[in-house]
Image 1 (tube, rainbow, N blue to C red):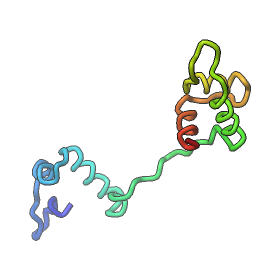
Image 2 (image 1 turned 90 degrees about the horizontal axis):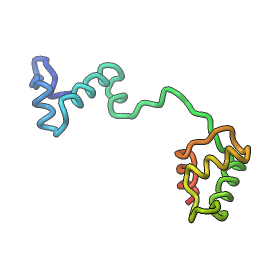
Image 3 (image 1 turned 90 degrees about the vertical axis):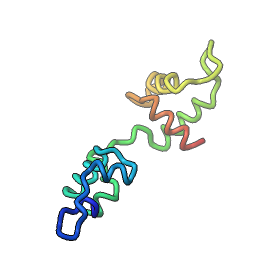
Image 4 (image 1 turned 30 degrees about the horizontal axis):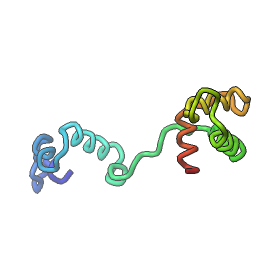
Length: 112
């Protein structure tokens, strides 16, 4: 931001020159300038909190069921469980109403 300063002491560099000097894109420099104007210095360097929150699909008991299922024998004709098979089976068993394969992935990764 100091390189863009157009005041009497500032060098008043254009975005293209700043981008080249700091190995950024011109759009990246413009984005930093916009965040600085909207949120100040601290808001520019720290990540913004998400605007929405998500309810957890799996509590401890449901996570345990998922892990139990993942450790069980794979369905007939399969050598192992896929993430989508696990999410579909959790719904089929009535453990959850809906469950994405991505939630299954994150849960199993968390528990190794």
